Length: 270
Ligand SMILES: [Zn+2]
Image (tube, rainbow, N blue to C red; front, side):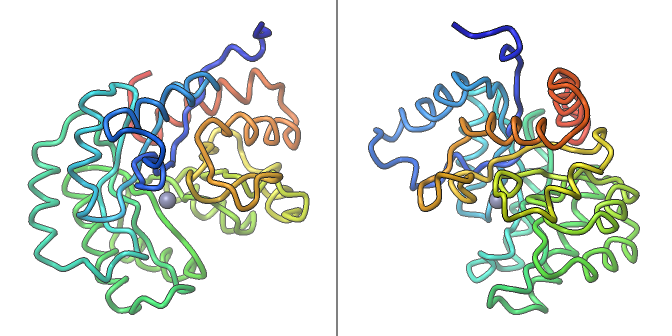
């Protein structure tokens, strides 16, 4: 029996439910259905799947077409730029020009100065995606790793005002407030389930609730206790519970507010 306080919908604002890894053990057309059913049983009613590059743009469009509760973003992930070239921007532009209501952002894009991908190419691709987002009036899903200063500099220089989400945030309170001021929401992920992540937990506890969304980043970023295992959207409830523990508000207010935020961040109707 589900208690009443558990009867609320959740929105996983960042998961890679389409990754091949999930298809092991499922037949190809059952895989995503099986995944979404498991998520739904854990109250995850809506999901957003960001793309990593041209390789999964069409796949995400197809998944969304048969699943009205799945939203997606199109873009180039900084990890996977090796296979990316400028010509693909034309295809991206065409897909955006004919997009449905479920394509709600550009991403996952950004800068990762930890991985071994040419910095110049990362910046070039990020700037072009920001310009596309402006043209189509879409928010960005931003991947940031050791690149906070440069991202802020580029966003300001290019006067980007459509906001978005900072995925898997683990920065300082001051950084979060700068993002919020620029129109971004803070993506709270599995990091807060780790007792050793005290700095991030303290920061998230202090930020305005109106700018928080939650995400699993499945199949990556397993929550505490599941290290080494494949992550899944069904664990979003664990992230929510941890968020409620570190916040002052009641569980009901947290749940209601982040549900609103998740829709507002991407201009989705509730
Ligand atoms: Zn991701």
